[in-house]
Length: 184
Image 1 (cartoon, rainbow, N blue to C red):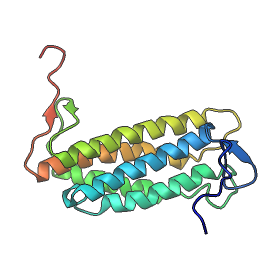
Image 2 (image 1 turned 90 degrees about the vertical axis):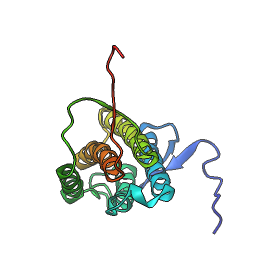
Image 3 (image 1 turned 120 degrees about the vertical axis):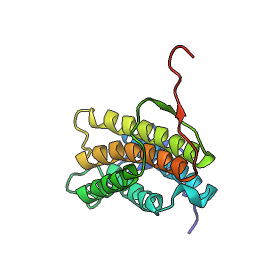
Image 4 (image 1 turned 45 degrees about the vertical axis):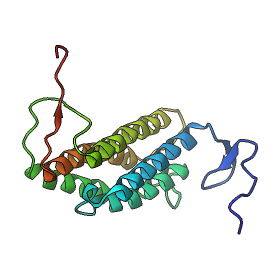
């Protein structure tokens, strides 16, 4: 089987279900942003082992494929539409709680940085927020069906990535980079 089909040469692509859609469609943009996030997490994972000491990100990558499938299945009764369940969200929350136990409470804003691993995780967090904005934009379009759990998962994932970046810094003995405010 060849990787190129030439069916997208005119700017159209397919979703799960009937019909062809422009590649600029809001739904295509939403799951494309989720795919980009998955690729950024792949960069994080391939950069060094310290970025995922407990194997959380490997699971997140699998979850993001399910998020993409849910977004590619606009039919609420479709096979993949409800692929993200409350357990996916609960797993992220358990990870956040576990990491926060060993971190000092935040008393000020921090800048993305610290170790190279933490900086890459912060980059993944910002891509996650962009993907979330694309999905929220899709959900606001009349007639579009976006599973609520997808929205919640992406929101929780950005929080998870923020805490993971802090955790990676702490494990490396590197302090988070404090924001110096408006009057440096």
